Image (cartoon, rainbow, N blue to C red; front, side, top):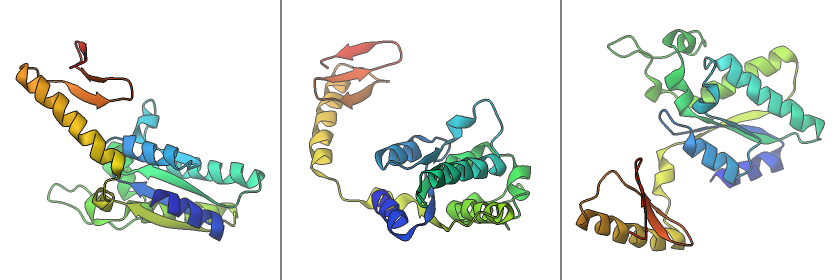
Length: 197
């Protein structure tokens, strides 16, 4: 899906503003963006020393648009983790000009809106202010990604994990992370590293 969005951007001369699920973390958006060579990836972890604002996110996308236009490329994709919303203040979200519904505690109900539409709307508004003629379209990558059929690697990887988890269980170990690589299977905990489990 993510690669076809980028191909659509290339063939139509459009920028796609993609929002990816991710709760408070950006690893899913980062993985999608790097795997598909998206020119702009925005995740909450980028803002560890500064506040997350719509203005900063919009400026990052515009900087990518301008850099690519200097290279003669009038298309691209910017992927943004929905996790950025969880690090914004309610005041920042409300000040965006987007009409939100609010929960019983007075917080904006983010689950009722398309994040990609919000980012795209704010981007288009800023581009118009700056006189930059760039087409952009929103695209939401949500939980339907979980509905993709597994590929052969997935089918082979799962039994490997299962066997290692079973071995750990028999040994009475917990708090381990099981990974599979081409050389060996191993488990890791914060306090120890066990190879050949």
